[in-house]
Every structure is written in C-alpha cells, then in structure tokens.
Length: 381
Image 1 (spheres, helix red, strand yellow):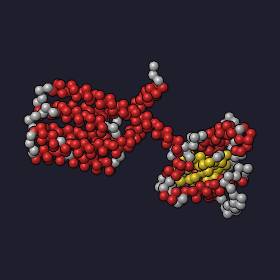
Image 2: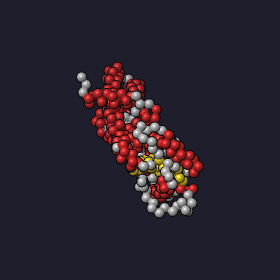
Image 3: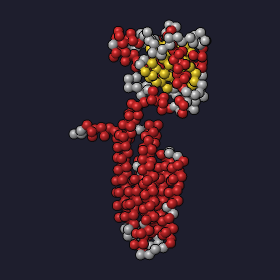
C-alpha cells in the first residue's frame, strides 16, 4: 500500500498534469524563472565543451585542421543569440525554444565536423552526450518542448546518416530512441517534483502577504506594490482609498466571544471583496479596520463603491448579530499614499462621530467638519 508521502506525490503529479490556461502559464513561467540561471550556465558549459572537442577531434582523426577550429569556434554565434535574447526577455516560451535550438545547433556542428573525418565509430556516444545536454537544457522548459527537442535528435541522426551512411543505423536509432524516451520521462518527473516546490512557494507567498483570518491582503502587500516614496501613481491615473471600521466591534467580542468576533471579521472581509471590482485591493489594516484601494476610480464612483460595501454589510446575514460599518473615502493625488490613508481615516472619524453606519468623503468635508479635536484612529466607543 502507498504511504502518505507517496499518495501526496501522486496527487501532486495529477494536479500538475491537470493544469490549464493561466494556471499552466504561471507554472511554466515560474519554472523557467527558477531554472533560468541554471539554464544559462548549462549552455555556457556546453559551448565550452563543444569547443574543447577539438582535442578528441585531433585524437580521433590524428590531425589538426583549420576547418575544425572554425567549426568549433562558430559555437559563439548561437551562444551570443541566447545571451542577447536572455537580456531582452524572460518569457519561458521564447527562451525554451532558443535554448533547445542552441543545443541542436551544436549537434549540427558535430555532424559537420565529423564529415571531415573517416572514423565515425564514436558518433553514437556523441548523440548520447547531446541527449544528456538536452535534458539539462530542458529543466527550464515545459515537458512537451523537451520531448520535441529529444525527438529532434532522431532527425539529426537521419541527417548524419546522409553524410556517413551508417552500416548499423538501426542499432543507433534503437539505442537512442530508448534513451530519448527515458530522458523525456525523467524531465516529466523533474517537472512534477518542481510542481511540489511551486505549490509550497505559493503557499508561503500567500501567507506572507495575506491575513490568515480573513484571507485578504495584509499591510505587506501595500509595501510590496508601492513605489519610491510610497507612491502609487504609476499604477493608475485615478485612485481612491477607502478605510472601514466595524461599528461597536468591542461589544461583539464582549457579548458573543472572540470566536464569533472572528466570524464577523471574515464576514465583513467577504462583503468588501464581493463589492469591489477586479483590480481593486482590500487590506486588513489592523483589528477591525480594513482599507480598500480602488484603481481607475474617480471621486463619484468611489462614493458609490463605498456605499455598496456599507449596504452589503448592513443587509447581509452573518449568523452572529446585526452589524454596521463606517467608511471614510479620500482621493489619492500622488505622493505618499499614507497621507491619503490619513485623510480617509479623518473622514472615517467624522463618520463615526456623526452616528456611524455611513460613508463620509474627505473631499466633501468643510473646515468646520475637519475640526478633529479628539481625533483618534482607534476610537470605537
């Protein structure tokens, strides 16, 4: 019977094979990013090995020719192409194709170099070495790309046969096909094991940037996306910030207990999420406070979104007790976003001072309303 570790590995492999659409794209891009430097190192090492084959060339053919030196030196051309593309893009599709083509370019170079000698007895060993290099270069590529690259080796053997006219072509093909199948399976297994790492990494990233109770973002996410000087203006020309606070939340904890209080916070977070649009962010700011960042959102629209959140919390059934929230809205005009959050918080203070369960916009406040004597962002009396 399978133990728990084996069952988990089988399930991980099944999950990897079922990946579709954007999830599959994200996985293969992450796989390339993880192996990117390893891939480049393999290609540099392979190019060095290709050039150093001048020594066995001399040993096999018992002569040194300028033709072989030129052929071996030409490896710098595909290597230069790889480096150029590497600096221009990190797209896994492009880099996988370019990397695997470079290995095939070295195979073609070996075939070309071998055509100047009379002894082709070592050709099978050469193809086996290149199969192994293809495997290493495939670590950063999807398994399908790796399989196609390995099968391309059969085409290279047939190409070489046009020059060398092997007497044992069937043996060479049979042996290499078995090796190709084995290495393709190895690459699939390696990709499956990377998927386990990928899932673990995603869970760690989620835990790092999400509040464990409500599953919305925590403050680290805001720091992650902010530019220099806490600037958000590069993300959207129109940004509004809404800060929300659960009214009389202390009474909920006192009357129903902290477990039910946690249920209320989860409920509020769900109401906020369902009331926002796709690109908007919701952050648990601390305690019973939440902050929403609304992108591509002008002043009037921000008020409508905030009202939709307030109404959703008031009218929805949470299974504990009836609750309401107060909201403060402010328009971000560039610079330090924490200054805008402070303005939204001042509007929230006015909303709570004026009776709670309402939306107040900082831009709508007059000078008298902005008399914030006694202002304290943690007021919840």
